[in-house]
Amino acid sequence: MGLDLVQERAKRERAQARLAEQTLAIRARTLIPQDEVDRAWASEVAAVKQILLSAESTHTDRICRSYELAGPEVVRREIRAMHREALMQFADPNRPIVDPKAP
Image (cartoon, rainbow, N blue to C red; front, side, top):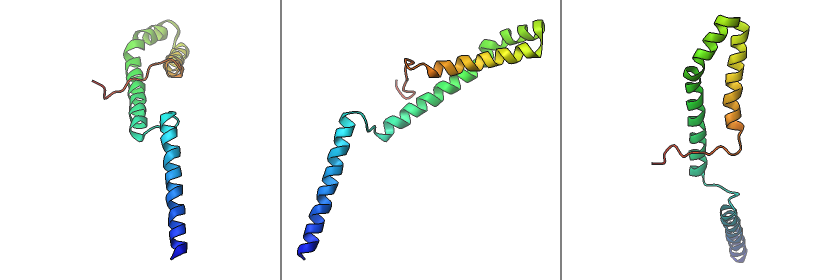
């Protein structure tokens, strides 16, 4: 019976130590709650969709003009530039992350 009590105390102390470590990590913002991570990813996915879907309308005229003036190779360059521009927007470390569920 004494051994079970010792084992249970040790188990409880380990659990309390893990909880204390998690609490400190949360306060230090090195452990982020799952709902915050989910919101951040949802925001990033929404931003990717918005930029990629708007690219067609914002670049159509330029791409058509390129084709008329110089042909398919220039169109490929324009499309690569469009992709690079979209990717650079996401590479910007100062780009604000917006919560899509925020009012």
